[in-house]
Image (cartoon, rainbow, N blue to C red; front, side):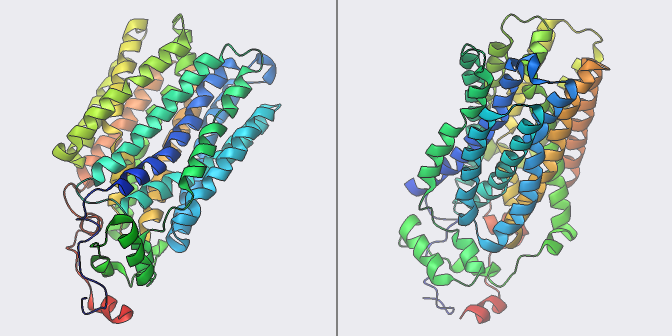
Length: 455
């Protein structure tokens, strides 16, 4: 026992990776699978919808971006809620919304209804974006934190790819195929909902609330009998405050997260949401299959990124990827009438680079904020990124029907160039340190104020 009355022992950060961490990564990843599935499935549905449904370029943009708009609201609001009421409560709430919303999509009769339902489902995605990575980061050991959180994007990409595969198969399901394709996300929602039942609360959050016995019991039961919460007491007396998040270094980090995530999300959602439509305009024989194959290229690149992540560092990896993406979109934008093969090849290169760097989307934000504002910070950054994603998704079909592909790609190149500049100026390196050190820039220690408050 130490002077505060907490058993001394190995910290959560230094504990070995156990089966519990892998299960938690899988369960949190299951939510990301659903997120990717729901956001991806609309790409095929938009192609399959009959003209009688009343789609216009504007409605295509609105429906394609509706879930992203909802994600903005969900991330912004419920990240703050999670810092006050805990991670566990919201960890399963979002799945109920996924299930109900998925089924409801089957019964829509006009674009407005579909837009509204996907807006609500997007709120649930926002909850998952803010809470899932935060929850996993607060359990993950230092040595495996990068891989565990990086794997979430892999699950997201698998979910997105699975939705395209279902769409390719579902295209042959008859007149109402698009309804079945949209509603199919109910299946993974039920599975993940069952798996998440009984998940424990975050011990870091419990310590911050002064509930040391509960936090220690969770560490002992799930991580190991020799694991102690003593090192977490440095943040025990700090209360969550959105005012803190909107000032000083934390505001700069929140802006950085929003910009770098937007710079990745803008082209990702804009291009992949309308890739089947775009490939069809280029006279590709099977546009749905082509979009699936290009999307799947992200998976081997993601695996390479997972290996490189712990060696290259977060900041270097992100900066190099932003530079490559800017170059790809500049090439696409500088050709007034690029040949189809070049467009397809460059989109394939885009998928490779995106897969390589996407490991950082859920890892980096969770490392940049302390426990009292971690979910709020991740939520605010995620909300900012959804502004970019929604803007890109809404504008792409409008730009394609107006100025054309060349102008759209030049705009996209400008977005990734901004992401590169902000990364070079503001991105800190968080590789190889504890979560407390990464989020605060200070060594882990127990303050006298915390010791007095809890003893």
